[in-house]
Length: 397
Image (tube, rainbow, N blue to C red; front, side, top):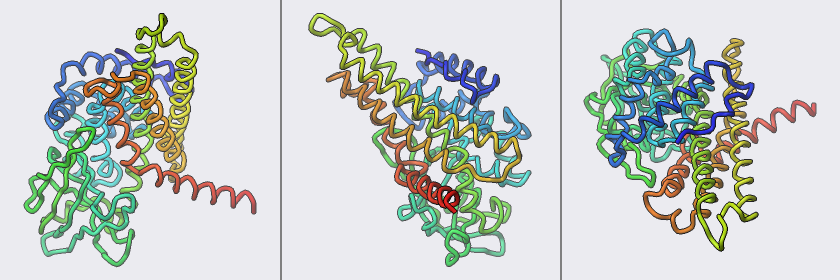
């Protein structure tokens, strides 16, 4: 099954995105059936290797370190995640976490750090993880309590990270910790911590409704050298937010992939399912529902493509201004709309929709986490609301 890619003809995209969309769609369609996803950890390792061998992980890092383009391209990330998610949520997850887990290194790493990690990420030889969340610091990321204390040889890390994607299979973690405990978000620094580091325990797997590698990471007197610091001292919170900003639009892209697959599944089912002497698609109620689903998909898509284009355009112009509100709108709308589209597809399938193993049943579980991770819907609403207040207040003055 290959997704419709007519949206790539929209003016948001360039020729490089058109070709990328065609390439990844053909590859994913051929590769997905051969990946055994019964064990999420083994499956993610397999997807990372396959994505690396095929060259698609090169889009996660800049060309100076083995990547595809000179800088990370938000539209390419959206195209890749949308297409991978259409075929396999785990393929999308594997790709996304390679980018998010190494994104802070791309943005703020030293040349030595980039040389050590980014090339291996692009080739699928190392698996990355982004370790920000804690039991008491999820949406309120500034409330984290993990500490990093300076020692003669480096830094001593202590704390607990949780809901860490790729936890347990990652080769390294980008860890955020308090270096000045009383300075709030201005006292947070970032560190690259290898999974083999003494004092790091990532063995506590977290089972979730849509299986993927997720774990609690314990840091108990974990010693890292000075060279492990990522970016400037006390600049970790800003770095974390910048990294999330880059990939937020791509979360919306993944939601679009789920929604487009649900719409295809619903349409095919409606055309084949016979009842009362007709197909389900013959009934106006079904046609109206499919129409609403298609509109919901396109509404999310347009906001997503706009957000990605705006960030890429800012990079092209050399602007240092953060593109924040638009990715928040895209993430909120695409994930919430995808939830509605998938729910409608499941309803249209009737009893088949709730049967474990059916595609719409798994999509129903897969989409739920996207409305939470990398900024819950409510957090996106706050970001958008603050932006509206600031911009409209300026207009009114």
